[in-house]
Length: 277
Image (tube, rainbow, N blue to C red):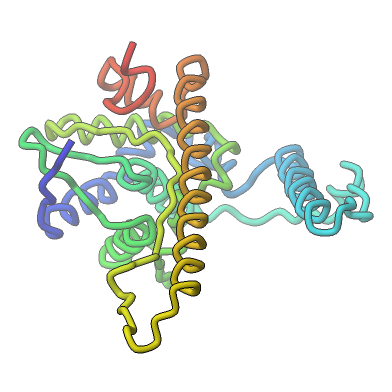
């Protein structure tokens, strides 16, 4: 679908409205108080959650170590009892954490190649992944939602993906989608896909007639063709992986934001594998 981008001022107005509705958000998703809700786990995970993340990080480092040096890392994994000795309890900063959580969820809906659009197929395009993070940060700073703290794009880049599993944020996504639906807006989902970009530009290569060497020219041509064949082969592998993942997604539980959309709109978003059924 081709969309016409809306002016930045209109996009900003929508985000301002979303952030100014934080009191309503808390009443909806945390009626017993933020500290007593699941939301608090996003920045204050349980010892068990922290230990699970620690082991995952260790496994990832070990895997990289094995690839580079053909042997696993010798550093052993701490036991749970050893690990929790170093855990420190941080005080809850409700305003900062709520603003951050809402910002992360907004990033996951408006960025990540997804599209929020109106009835005229005009999109609320906040920019690239980095650009969207910066757009969200600028709105928060403009509203001065958190005292003595200035946010930047890094605070929201990737939408808090490393904290996704700590709490069920579906109610937050539902809140956002209800606000969006009330304004007669919709959402197109973009299934994750990898691609290659070739920076080779033959137009920049000028023929040097005086120093033309047929053997050298043939060698360069063969190298170029081999490089293009390797790129095409790798791209085909990416395409095959995409098709496989797309098909598997029909049988997996959708992400929290997709489930929230379904609960609000009563159907899966355009672009998601389950929307084809």
